[in-house]
Amino acid sequence: MGIKRIDNITEPPDDVVIENILSGDTEQFQALLERYQAYVFTIVRKYVPPQLVEDVAQEVFLKLFRSLALYQPQGAGHGTTGSFKSWLATITVRTSYDALRKMYRSSEVTISELADNHAQWLDSLLSTSSLEDFTRHSQAREAKEIVDRVMTRLSPEDQMVVRLVHFEGNSTAQAAEILGWSTANVKIRTFRARTKLQKLIGNLLRENER
Image (cartoon, rainbow, N blue to C red; front, side):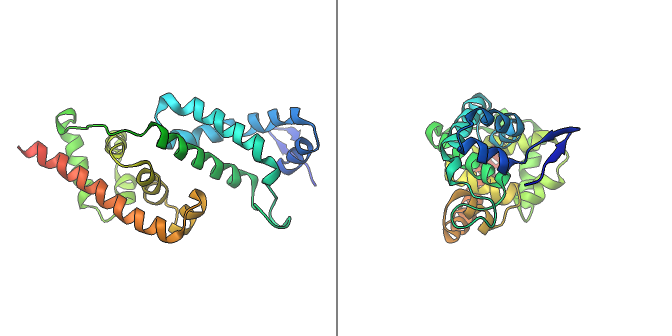
């Protein structure tokens, strides 16, 4: 395989590093840690509360080390194929989902905790044709923060499909592949999750009118 240059430093590509690790040079796993640590943390932060990010990221790398033998580069035969980065992303999302399931509990969000402009953003969310349109067109960071807070009222499964499909723009098939679910399951759960989320937001707005 060829060699690639990153920031003027010659480094072996991922597949070479992985081959070396599987051949017994486990110290090279540190190279993968350094190369993808920021990438993993970025993904984890999307799905779990801040206090869990570091622990979940560490669990991702532990799972990665244990399952490296299952990875196969695209075109390398049967089994798990594709780019290492996308394979790692799948492990990261699934690990985040597992962590979310463990810590899941109901949390109350009342409209009294929200500023008037936050309530307006929620109202805007209900009137848009899709959640992704709302987050795309809103210029306020607080809008996403409020949606995130309401999201905690959903089950871990519903949170995952809403984030993957509506917030990140994955197709139903892509979300199904990432989560290891059937396409039909993702399609049904996505519809139901979006309905639940809008109902929760509607309840908050009605509370504000009392």
